[in-house]
Length: 356
Image (cartoon, rainbow, N blue to C red; front, top):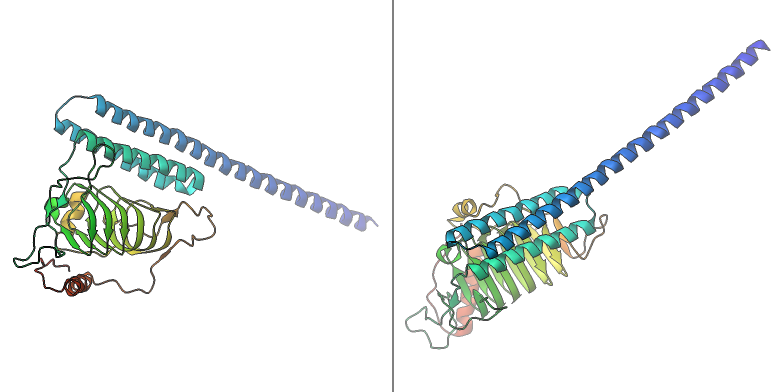
């Protein structure tokens, strides 16, 4: 009897000890969860206050530039500083996305997009650049007067299209043309393209930014872009783009060979295919260095679709190119020129552009 009593006592003590251990483990887990939540909340709060303050600083810097009086060299330096601050803030947002909600990421990205637009507009107003237009200069001595041209020479536009009060497109209203801008026309410039159809456009150099609006059935090949590539209303186009930021809006049927150092953004887009940047030409390495673009950092697989915020289900609006051979741009160029000549019923002289 005494042995049975001891066994029951030991059994009760064992159950009590086990219950205490389970309870302590539960309390430890809850404490760790509360600690993690507290750290995450502190991280979000710190990010919000830091992001807001840096945004205010950039806005104040833009206001100071507009009020200041000084030589053009000072303006150029001040705008360069503002651009670096916006790029740093973009990197800060990208590095913080792991603990931010999709809504917060989208809101902050919209702020950055606005800052970039305001900076570009202010730069254009205070430091207007000579824009490139296109003349009807013949590329062959015996060319017919109204024939299309394969290479378009860049000259100042006589009647620029207005956007706001101080804007003219670099390339506009072109169809069935091979358009090539070399480094002297591209480097450091803000290249703008509008209303182009069935064109092959090559930008060989390092633009400051590129903006495309309304393009269909076109191919755009571009060297490293120092800042952003923004495109809207594109239909059935192929792009080979290297840039810091990519924003694509209201477009469908787009194939992009991409190098992007920040997170790419699409909105109101469908049937977007993305592969790795593969455009090449003799001065590409030098243009990477001049643009300041980090060649070793390519986030082409990281795409934010602002119409698809579900973190667990991939967006149906874009996909990575798989088992698809890289395009041969030389062959594409030759075919484009041959088809253009056949359609025009005559042969044209074409400037040869070697691509490795």
